[in-house]
Image (cartoon, one colour):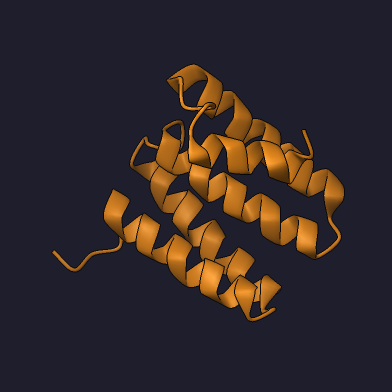
Length: 102
């Protein structure tokens, strides 16, 4: 308990990263998202809707920094996860498609 090495911990890190991004601290947000991604990968859960949500957050920050190629790469990875898990037609999936520009 109290560990960030859980799905809940990863989602907390995502929320913290999002708060940094909203303040314009994009490099800091991406560092936090990278930690969350590493943890989620270690848990074997990057290919879940939680992973897709994290990847969408990474894409939004990359896009805001002007890294459009990097943003599209992680958006597409998130889209593949949503398609495999049948969650593309959810609010998170819709947000992802909006981010991609579809």
